Image (cartoon, rainbow, N blue to C red; front, side, top):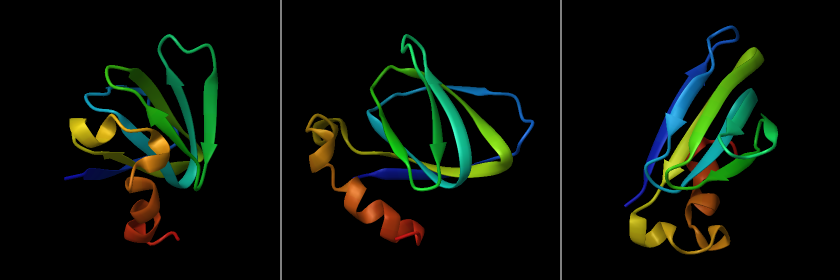
Length: 101
């Protein structure tokens, strides 16, 4: 079973910290997101349609760009999440499910 959650951030909201319980795919549905993962030397600016894999136990900080943003966080079971990201079925059905494909 997979879990998909949809979130919206307004511009000007303080950055929010997320502790990732299970390996997850973070995908921007609309707008622009600033995302950084503690311990990672790079920050990421993700635009509509872009995604990033978040490993289990990571702490990610997210904030919206000028126009605000909407994003999805999708995770599978622990068993399914241990396979490489290219084999995750989430990448195939998530865009259709969200109506952005």
